Length: 468
Image (cartoon, rainbow, N blue to C red; front, side):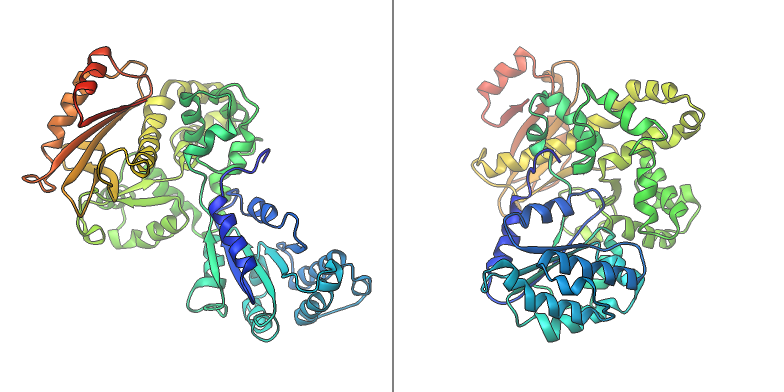
């Protein structure tokens, strides 16, 4: 990354762990490219720290590399030429020499083991080995260890689940997420709001993707160079992400493709794939855990877990873009006809993709308005609402009060007028939430602004907000 942006909350948490008395064991994990290593590197700036990157090699090779890393970064020359077949001994050398290397005896000893899951993959007993080292050697010392990993399923099974030997040892964990839209102006200070939304719609808050898109004049040129070429970095990214996490990659691809085509109900997904609904459970659960899918329910539902109105939505912007525009055109691209796929992207990207991502951007902005006390109440739930025939982009409710906000998001080239407000008001009457005892409020988001007539009306109504 050219600049380290966002992550202040995560950095603050790590600093608190570093400042606490005694030992700290933090699990830092999340999908590939999301910025875990960058966060760790930012955190250890101006600190004496051991950083070790595990590899997909044998345990012996990793142990030797770890020994050499400890030797180099602690200045222990004798360790380099010593043959050690015990992890315990290397950690003991670190504990004994790290303070001398820093020259500050009371400074907390800090170690980061990146891609920790590869050690457990090389030797399934390694989490138990590290548990023993932690319990007998580290937990009562002034040390901080951060275990990082990018394979979510393996990291959870090796460090977080009840069956893991390390269960109960951690003092904290961070599951690193994508960067929210509101920070995009810091990545691209010269871009307009419309351009920022376009870039977010493809890169989805993943730092590595954002970095790749830095130096291109527009979103289409960036896509052409970073996604459409068979040799480009992101051409086969979904396959690369999934093949590390799941074994039946074809089945997972089929589920994602089906949802990308608009089949969001469990029954519809099952019918399309010719599977029983119960047979889909493990695929959907895994994809949700990987932050690729989410289950949405109408925001007014009182028991979300039991609701039968749930829809499955692809929450990763790049994944849904890829399955909508790249996957269906792989034959064209493989045959060297990228221009055919690019033409379809230019024709359909806004209406079929960016306009929907804009709704998520607007919901994010709603929470900022809420924090800024825009209304004389604070809502505690915000999302979409729908029934069999009608959908509202945004509904926000105060569960303990009687206030409700209805909103629409229009990513149009034309200005939004009175007709949009009139339709929204009619749809609002269909929402049953506290229907006989509530205060209705309305908000309209428009990337292209509003007509003079609607702007004048908003000045005369205290229940209507217009947002560019």
